[in-house]
Length: 379
Image (cartoon, rainbow, N blue to C red; front, side, top):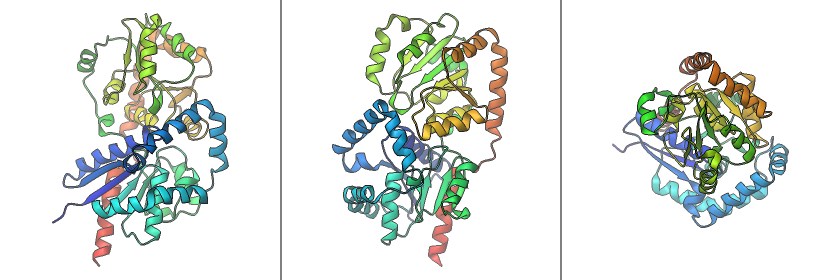
């Protein structure tokens, strides 16, 4: 009997969308070992020369013109992709995506980005008869995610579900699962072993991340942090941002035994385990990983649009705080240095809340959807 197959489609606009797809792939195979999964960044797979140029242009636009990006985000908030954008996706991806599906023969498709969701929805309108599951990877529901062809939406919160319902999506199509993170974020790790592996001291530790593009933005923010290096240990996670890594390494402020500069790593879950505070941009995936690890968060420089919505959600629940000035960081650093036991107690509460989260498991929902669809098809 042929093994069931799930195709997970993402795009490379930031790392979070693909991380969600990869996390789901791991969770699906853990829950159902006989299941076959395949993760594809559709644009990069079909157009390996063109896609990096598009992603770079998008990144530069967001960094240099955040207000413009926010304005575009809000102007299209309640709308699906406009006809011109849909036509472009149709011309660039439609026929080739249909061929990929024909060759891979998936029993279900999961999209973690709006663009492949639009393409597959169009294929379903043209006769493709397999379930389409859409995972919204932020704490908001922009109109570009919405399509009547989606079989099931997996969303982060009740508020996101309500937003979809107001746009005409039937309640039975929406499941609240949280944003999927790698199973490692739900598991405890040996802190001593992690510290030894990364040559870390047993000190109050602050982890600094910059989202899918590595650390960006105001250098004075990071230099202010370095001023606490005698009392606080810092882990600067620079991702694939080689330029930032080189720049930090050359700055005497960061040449200290308590400051660790890290490039790309697949062990963010372990580094969060030994950290007491996470300073990050409020991307949906990073926030969800921090939530799973029960780590307090400080947010800086949210991109107008979805990151602002993410920030609002987490700060409203007391799970994070926006950095309004250096004084915000100083308050937390002073508490870490002088009242460490209170910080550890707060962390235990957050971890307990994360473990007792009543949300459905996204991989279980997808497998159930796949089984129900095949049972219906067999009738």
